[in-house]
Amino acid sequence: SQQGEEDPQALSIQEGENATMNCSYKTSINNLQWYRQNSGRGLVHLILIRSNEREKHSGRLRVTLDTSKKSSSLLITASRAADTASYFCATLIQGAQKLVFGQGTRLTINP
Amino acid sequence: DTAVSQTPKYLVTQMGNDKSIKCEQNLGHDTMYWYKQDSKKFLKIMFSYNNKELIINETVPNRFSPKSPDKAHLNLHINSLELGDSAVYFCASSQNPTDTQYFGPGTRLTVL
Image 1: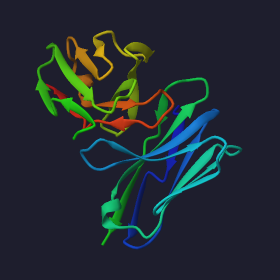
Image 2: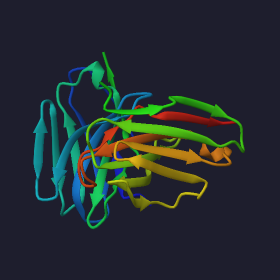
Image 3: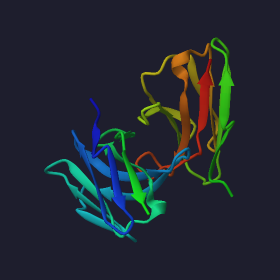
């Protein structure tokens, strides 16, 4: 089974609302990263949060990390149509040198 | 100025053929990667090179062979293509193996 699993698999909200996506993982990590993928494009890095950090902000993005529950969440506030994309969490497993990606949350922002 | 570029963007070929995908990064990064994204959008690492040395080689058929002529380039050669190889292949780079990764635009491979 996968290291990272995301919830929900798909999310559809109205423009201006907040969107929350969750990621759970199984093993200890060095860091957790969130990426965005627009349809037909490559992934774009959003935020990296280290295992000793609990919360990070970047513009309208807020990421939390709870290592005791092995989970993270990505909050996008005041969503815009341009936020429509798939969002992936990726974990850097402790002792390894590779990112393991979840299957992503497909976010649709309706105008 | 494209940070990570891949060629070709689309590749349609017959089963049994051999093909290559090229990747170049101009970010001065030491680490480069190849990922495969299947039809369900699941992204899985295939290979990683750090300073031209192979550091990750996942369970990938040996028909796939990466080559890193220098730190800025990582090419992927695929022999005897099979239907199941159809996917989008992404190249990425990072300063080191634990850092943020920068992805190329992807190569959509279709094997007929």
